[in-house]
Amino acid sequence: MSAIKNPDPETESAQKHPARAARRSDHGTMVLVQEKVLSEIAHELGNFFHKLYYWSDYLKEQPAGAPTESTAAQMLERTIKNLEDFLKVSLDYFHPTRLSLMRMAIPDVVGGLLSQVRAQLNGTPITVSDGGAWDGNGVMVDPSHLSQALGVAVASLVKQVGPESSVHVAVGKGARGDGHWLEVSFELRRPSDPSPLFRTSRAGVEWAVAQKVVALHGGELAERPGTHGVKSMTILLPRITA
Image (cartoon, rainbow, N blue to C red; front, side, top):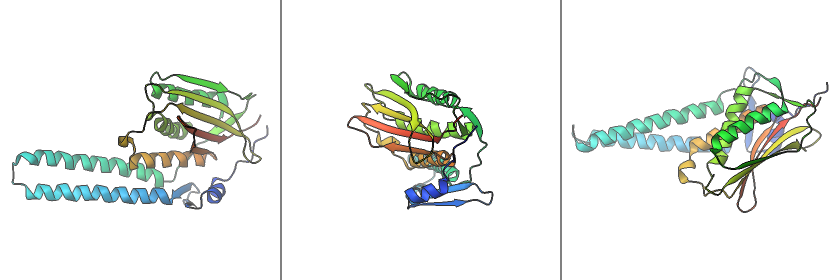
């Protein structure tokens, strides 16, 4: 059996993304840091603390038992809960990720991904084209971490599903350099306009965590420029040839 030479994610990341720093933990696990994500985290933390101080001062100024006191206390509690959730996903971004890799057949990996897509699409029409003759080809994956990352990616896609939307998934052999790749592309046709409710800093950090996990597999998760009326996303993973 011959295996491909997997690209080093740290070197490739530095070449493609000058604004992204890559470092390794004491245990040799790579941690990707993007300046854009750092800025987003810092900005959102500032917003949270501004809200906390606002509601704290508001409660101090209210007489005990005032009708608005209960509402203000609820808003303060909600802000604390949202801050806690945001800190958890932010720590996931910085925390070294340990992968327990195992070889999986490509049809099994694709089948699991399609199951996640169908579960989140909730009846939206989906078509699949598989252009690969895999002949025992596989990929090295950590099923748990990759499943979580793909769940975030699919959720990002389906947030723009509208009443007339449909999804096409194309599975094939990607071409990049001298490597062998599994490429899964998604096209969301006739997407709805994204709701401002989904344009959150938390969603942005969750996407960055998903990108980090895929990069640690030696691959790439990216949104692609689509034609008018199409939202596109691509997942690349190094493919092991039989």
